[in-house]
Length: 395
Image 1 (cartoon, rainbow, N blue to C red):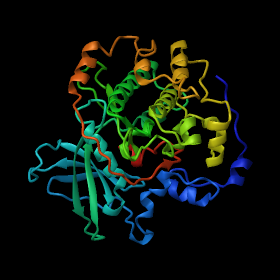
Image 2: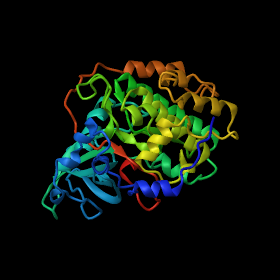
Image 3: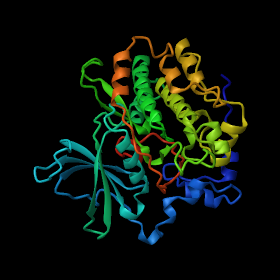
Image 4: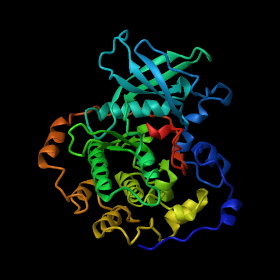
């Protein structure tokens, strides 16, 4: 694999810099009038709410309900805040788990949570996708504004990005990386079978749940896909012919998506390959280039002939597996089914025929939703989440 060359800091400073963790796609593209405005930018929910009406949620904005008691503030993201809660005996929702995660947004800014809810409803009962338990509208006592809350599964292992951070510069043991990669692929296989493109696969959107069978040892975890706020249904009116879409996180966006605004399942495969590469190396994909702005990303990912650097120190099977995910041309990139049969993931035949048949039996006919969901399209998210602070995609 050809290793890309770093851009100079002078180039980045000349183009301008913005805060990566708080990047807003609509804001960034407005600053760059020379960029063509995509459909997603035009539909950004940040336009629907004047700044003076926006509610900034933090640990003081506790989503109160008879159904749960909040025990801990976990963090906040661009859409709102995240809390850990326990079920109460007063609530009527007996289907709620004992522990749960509450994602909260101001009602006027709930497009991403609504979008996530819509897709998680269609992906229910899959062990490799985070579970959704419902939504609830509450009133914030301080601001007197309505809050939109979604109730999700609590994964005590937190997100994959945190686990990678603890192995920075070294990478996860290859056996762990293989297991997590297979988990993600099984989840993606189910997601794609429902005509859903995730659009934002990355370590922050992979949660680690307890593995209850004991096959992965007493401290084993199962990887689950979360963060469906930017997902899109292929074949829907919103998707159209697949052109004119640019959404995701820049570091993980595929060449055809970031360059030509073409969205298809291959975009998820590219982002998955970047995620596996981070697991195996303990380093951010493209990290050798330092901090980049939008024009730099286009030059690096689209214009140049470079792909993310795959170290020679990785195993032969790992290098070949990653090369199949990180083909510049989407038609040359392997699909999920092919990747699941690659020698890198069939070292112990963990994914048995019986499991595959079980998944197929669980699939049901789903109603196609055509409503258009407004939401932010692109983020530039360059840092691993800090231990003391979680961000939007961590849960």
